[in-house]
Length: 460
Image (cartoon, rainbow, N blue to C red):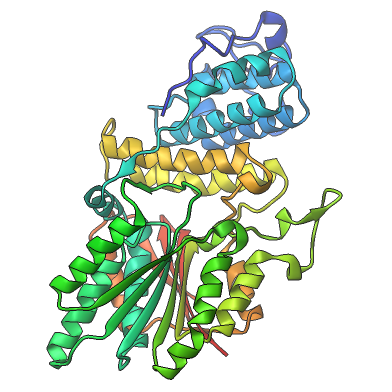
């Protein structure tokens, strides 16, 4: 990620600094003025000291910057961006790198929305601030997701539950709505093959269907879904498993309507053939638009009948799936208020920045790829609105309520499944943890904070 510097963020004048709380006029001098509410008042701390390096102070600066942008206060926006630029280098500690990501996103928002000189100047250089998202090869992506339990948690929890749910079926249809391009599937194929080898039975036919998502969300793959499908089919064949692979061109922006229609057409055939249907949703459903996109005269609609998320889940219920696995990040980025969204994102996305220091060295290519993906998420949450803002995470509790309202019933992960996930976490840093919630759900934690949840659902 690019480090911002003072070449395009001019430093405030003395007159501007006089209206600025506790910000330095030099490395060793401070200028005392009336502080913002809740902002540190000590004048003995120089720039870059513990006060300014504190995450709470950085968050407060970002909040004031967001408010200044929203009120089109160019002077104040310039002043705060200048300070943030100096205290949040892109190669600093985890809090500084996190803040730098939000700084970049606020600059992008200011450049899009501003109508005065400093914001226009930002717009002129905005092309140089783009995030370089790496396109992974299959091997690179497989190794990348193995670095952390962020995705492995969901893979492990889901595969154990799927194996239990499809026991005895000769045909297993898996619909994989996954952010990670089927990286979970080879392990599942291998587990199915191994189980049937032990039972001296022929393995079931596996049908794998994926939605051809076109939004270009990271992580990105350097080959097409057709090429990916061929590799998966060949891998299955190497394990003596017959697999069919289908790509249904479908997008989260319309609630995967083409995919739903395809599955609906296959429904009667599936019932007649006693075919298991597993819907595996891995960090993909939050890209389906939710109620706040549907508005009249600027007011968010409150009726769930207009929600594509609700429509999608009810359509899934009508398919009578054998199992629905829902795994996602446990945060809420749906607020229409920029400051609320910024606070939610800042108080969740510190986690990936904090964890990366435990498994990737500073300056490594993989660390650059990892943090570029986070910055893409930050920019989407902060700089965009309307249909362009697709990072709309909802908390576990809200998804649980959605599933129940759609006539699904939650079921528990088995003790074996719980133990398998716990064993997987032992391969990673000590900060990772695992807990049960509501006696059914599994939650991945980092230093006690919820990160990713895993839930299992069957029709009532």
